[in-house]
Amino acid sequence: MLALSHYVVLADRWPRRLIALLGGACGALALAPVNFFPAFAIPMVLSVWLLDGSAGVSRWMSLRRAGEAGWWLGFGYFLAGLWWLGAAFLADGDRFAWALPLGVVGLPAFLALFTALGFVVARLLWSSSPRRIFALAAALSFAEWLRGSILTGFPWNDFGMVLGGNLYLAQTASIWGLYGLTVLSVLIFASPALFFEEGRKTLPAAGLIVLGLLGLFGAVRLSAPERVIKGAHLRLIQPNVAIADFRADRKNELLDQYLSLSDRATSPDRNGLSDITDLFWPESSFPFILSEDGPALALLASRLQNVTLFTGAARAERDGWSVQYFNSIQVISGGEVKESYDKIHLVPFGEYLPFANVISKLGISQFVAIPGGFNSGRSSRLLTAPGLPPLLPLICYEAIFPNETARRIAAQAFRPGALLNVTNDGWFGMTSGPYQHFAQARLRTIEQGLPMIRAANTGISAIIDPYGRITAYAPLGVEAVIDGEAPKALAPTFFSRSPILMPLILWISMLLVALSGRRKV
Image: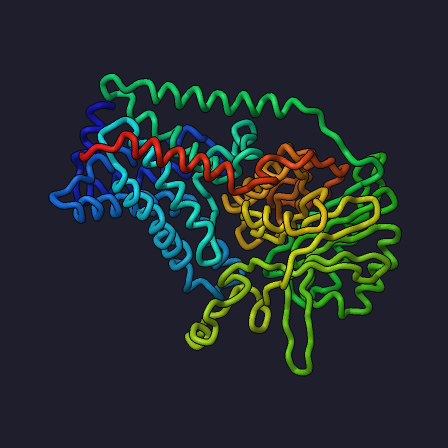
């Protein structure tokens, strides 16, 4: 290991770039669905050695070498972690096949700029002291926060998910959320880089102790019994409809499939619709505007008696010749739309086209087949139904934003009793994408102390309690029906009350320790 560290520190040009690229790619093994969190030590240890080897004849040369190494490491990490995006470009035939390289290679190349920035900041704080790993933790966690915040934000596979994907290690997210876990992930898994430095085994040992304490905290927290709301009998359907089959000419077939699944007998005490109170269908369930289709609403009224339906559906607002479309969740009872939530945080290029006036002239369109794409919803709200606590709706990847979820909850007149996440991950097929999406959505339950009801077209659908424990589940890529009871919420977590405070304290602590050990290299 000592010889390896010397080799990495002294590596230059393409050997150095290749080391960073392959090291970053190994880090993706720590993410879902593999979830082998020790693999994250590979890119983090290499990060320390690469930064050690970034010294140049000038300050500018040193920063340039650091940024370049960071870009290659980030590129490897995001390329290996986001390769599945290519499936979305092929899900609707060859309509978007031409753009596949832009998603599979272009997006990782762009996201790697944030890792490069983190390396540059780390190099500015660097020293020969063992405390330089605190500089790495401060710099990379800042870069990851920035990645999740600017340009609409994209915190997918944030470094904090290394700990956040493990149910035991993730429990401290109830204190400091995803970005607190990011700080700890970098610090813990960078510490082995110091093990072979003379007289510097204290920090690697401390890293193992912290990891053990995280697991112990998680074990104690997960020993709490499950609690459910009496009288609330939930059913989630996972229809597993291919993207190519969402067509207007299949309207009746799709409705028949949904209603058949909804009324399926699954056990002696679940003989069908007569034994449930609340029904959940996934995002974008209909290739038509449900609220404007009288026959479809009449059919729902006749088949879903005494059942409240929560379903994903496109919604239209008409003003003369002008029409605005929204990606919505609608609450339907007695064949009437009682409540509706419009998705606020839309997927760029997926649901709308940024700079549409310019880009559309190049023949580029958004993935969804809606004229002009979806419009963003105007405000968040809670959805309600008799016998259920208020639900905070999150459509698709709205569930991956920790601080945005916290702000929406804080903006309500009263706290919701659960999170409702509907999604259609059929775009990504049988790849890593839906597993990563599920892991990130589940972390919101731990952060907020709220259960989650998650209906996904192709999976992964689940009922999740406020500790992140799965109480009912349907695997990816199968048609399924999930029955379960509604879990009870916990009291507000520390993170839910102060989503900025603890991550900020952790980050400032890293920065102060890094500065205290700073000496010129």
